[in-house]
Amino acid sequence: MIISIVSGKGGAGKTTIATSLAHILQADYYDLDVDAPNGEYFLQPENWQTETVFQPQPKIDKSLCNACGACARECRFNALYKLADRVYLNDSLCHSCNLCREVCPQGAISYKPAAIGSVRSGDSSRTGARAIIGDLRIGSTRATALIQRIVRQIDPQKPAVIDGPPGNSCTAVAAIKPAELVILVVEPTPFGIHDMLQTLKILKNLNKPLLIIANKSQDDGPLTAVLAEQGLTPAASIPLKIEHHKSLLAGEILSQSDPKIYRLLQQALTRKTGTE
Image (tube, rainbow, N blue to C red; front, top):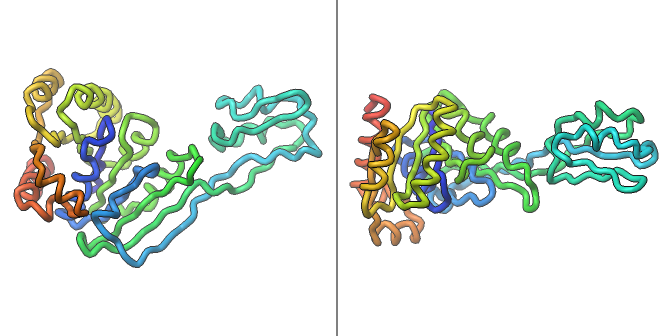
């Protein structure tokens, strides 16, 4: 089973739940929070292997380009623009769609590979499985492309836990798409509930099976009331405790340091999937 862990906002505890489930299920762990991956600090993988990920990027041959502006007019992402007698590329806006090369009457545009990030993989003795970490290159805006590259490596025959990026952008959707089950981690605060509702709209459109976990909870009343309006209930609630924070600061997997959390998450997952 492929499980994606998502949250509408950062800091809800998504990685706490994702690493715990990887420990409980002895599952491969995919950290797709490529801007700021941190699951490795809990899983402590070894025997690293690293692969650089490239994506095609336009290259304009100045000797052939006559600055007709056809590429700039057709680029739907405004990555190309004409200024005086020259065409320029803003590579941070480029989606490598190849349209500019197709419409250039002078044949002045070709594509070259550009590094957008890397994928690191290692063995975690804490889960008995692999940990795959995506690292977006600093300054790159191709997070979705990097995530899609990593997703293609998932073995559907093995249990996999995806630690997705926070929020509700294209990157979050890319991490949700391969999932057979989505776990939405919610911080039961006004901000957390607000962003959760945005995520629920995405999950409804994608028609994904859903399990909701409240984390860092002090009062689930407002969350439970909002979820009831959606016909939903929390599958589990993890209280806000100083002991949990101390464990996480020490780099411990919460389900490993606290047997109660292990049972709580295992039971929530078992009720949803019907497995032992």
